[in-house]
Length: 394
Image (cartoon, one colour):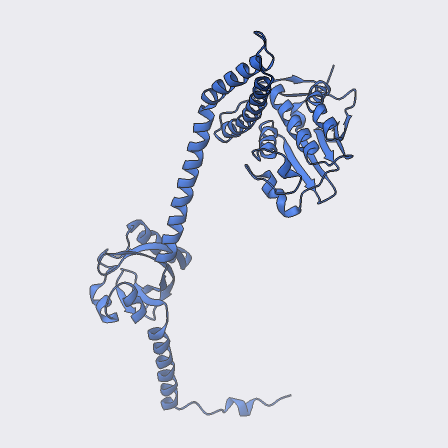
């Protein structure tokens, strides 16, 4: 067994040495306190500042620590811009023993600055309660954040205003354009007799075709704006998907034939119906098929299929063997007015709203649109409509 008797007889540290060690510790603490890059201060429970370093004094616009202790800004209620913050600060420190927040305070010359304030509860030897705190200036950061918030709010307001303006312009834009198309059709087809010059018929046909293209582009823009403005509602009926697909395939068949692209349709004969809007559903499928045909080179194929999955959801997919989309470009393709540059895409005009508008219309039905693609290996678009929209045929 070890003998601890010798250890018990260790001579005590001389009092003068202990006093010197304490003075050295106090000197080191004082140097840290005075030279710190952040404001450090101590406040009594009644709000009286009992100590503050030079950084804290300078931060609040005072010439020295003595000046801020003489002014006692917190005790006089001149420190916190919002006095509720002062009450909450003291209450939280007393209850939780710690506090940290970003608050607005007044400087000596009554400027408002923002500080990051943190502190903890202290108890002195005599039992008196106080708060030891640190703070640093975050005014520039807060100004930048507020400027960014204002800019975002202004951009959101401008975007809403734009969407509402376009949504309300539907009649004003479509009416004169429909008149142009109608009169061009009359001249093109020479409904009231021979025009006389073949060139005029050609020009009328150009006007008619250009008008239809412009109307299509305007319709896309107006439809997207209505959805963004929350003004697009659905006129729901029970839809036979087989009939919808057949109708849309007739619309795109000429384009597929012209581009020498094979169009495949796989719809089960017993596929349930779907609760939705006929116009929107035709627009969805027409957009997807047109896009797929547009970006599929000669000899390629586009396949549309539909099925009910194990969760009773209706799945409609459009798969092509086209040029595909690079992973980094998918987000661009799905963004309104986003257009991806390629040799094939430059041959075709458009607003870049096809996919975003289709996605928005699918989401109006409570569904989702997922796109998968790879450069040179085609694109697959999958639409999923919830089970609540599936109507079982009697």
